[in-house]
Length: 341
Ligand SMILES: [Zn+2]
Image (cartoon, rainbow, N blue to C red; front, side):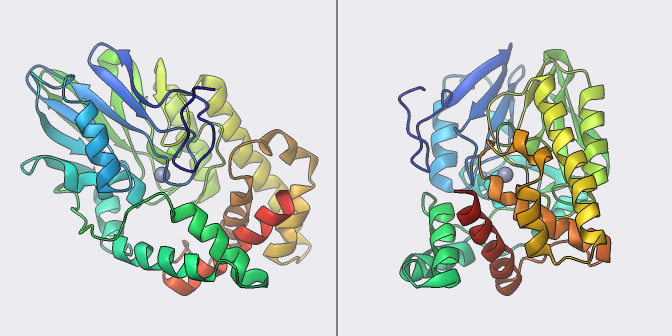
């Protein structure tokens, strides 16, 4: 315990802020890695700096960039990378200096064009707070959603999308340092990219990696996430910075790989019997294979992952993010949350 209280009000399990991983290479960690508690990073070269991801709202981004001032005093921020399309990794772009070039994979840029804007989440947050005491499923969904969005200020943000794209790989020169952008998706999202800094032995893995936190798959397929983890391991880095949670060890990568392998096989067995997703979720909670993952934060995200597996097996395509589809998905999450807690 650190004495720090997380954005969601839990005791901080590891220190918040910058950790130097190698000379001029920093991770920004936001304990404990739950909804919207996303990590970021800095790569400081000779006379210029690159930022990896910019958090979920302008206030958090401004704080993260403000804390970086002494680190980048002789190397101003010229470049940023957004690892993927989820708002908790790029809505803070607005706080970057105005002339910064912002990179993302082409697939991420295409997804961003179809994402609901911050003001839609601000509205959802308001409505959820109003209806959180409603009876039954409606109240449970509202309560879960209000808790998820509560710590964040989305209302007045007009998002600032990435300015530059790449297909599968792109190498940047950041003040004489090589920084490799690799798209390893589709998995969590279509465009998932990681940032590899070879001279530091560091990989910023975005949401292809969660540590001590249950991962969520929006696009998939799951088998592709397993492949993505193998590619991360093959990079042989000394430090892996997850999108959420503390710095990863190789065992953390293997644990997440094991989660997907368990879920692929256990859910297939359940769906083969013709059971509907809600029943499969509840049965998987009692599956002995789930035991080792049950203590990760937000284990109820299993609901989203079972729905994703159902879409995979029925050929239904990626998760839709319109308000109705989102409410249906998160209603399953809220119900499973009740079962698990
Ligand atoms: Zn995230």
